[in-house]
Amino acid sequence: MHQGIVWLFGVALALLAGIAPTWAQNMADGKKLYATYCSSCHGEKGKGDGAAARSLPVKPADHTNGAVMSQFSDKFLVDVIAKGGNAVGKSSLMPAWGSQLKDDQIRDIIAYLRSIANPATKGPGK
Image 1 (cartoon, rainbow, N blue to C red):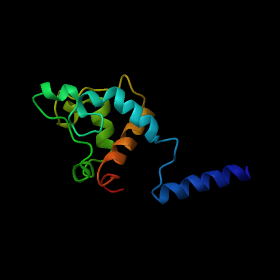
Image 2 (cartoon, rainbow, N blue to C red; image 1 turned 30 degrees about the vertical axis):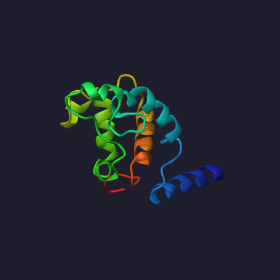
Image 3 (spheres, rainbow, N blue to C red; image 1 turned 45 degrees about the vertical axis):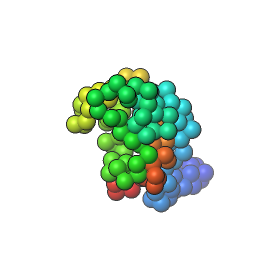
């Protein structure tokens, strides 16, 4: 019981300090998922220059642009990844991945996105 209270206190303290629990965000897994699901349009490095981007009428988002990425909340990024561009007023060419990806996988992708932005971002209000 005592260890459980200490663990719970540690998690609460980490959340208050702005440190996300490691089980919620795994950048290494996010990078692999990004390579599988996102890189064909957004590019291997996230600059919006993937092989499929050349044939799209709208350039995919540049995830390395920290000034732009910092404007997007995690909830917005979850919604655009899970529900597609149309759901958030962005390009309908951005597919919805919610049926292929679990919630924790989407959070892993977002952790990776935040890490490749320059400067690195946490999103508004973080």
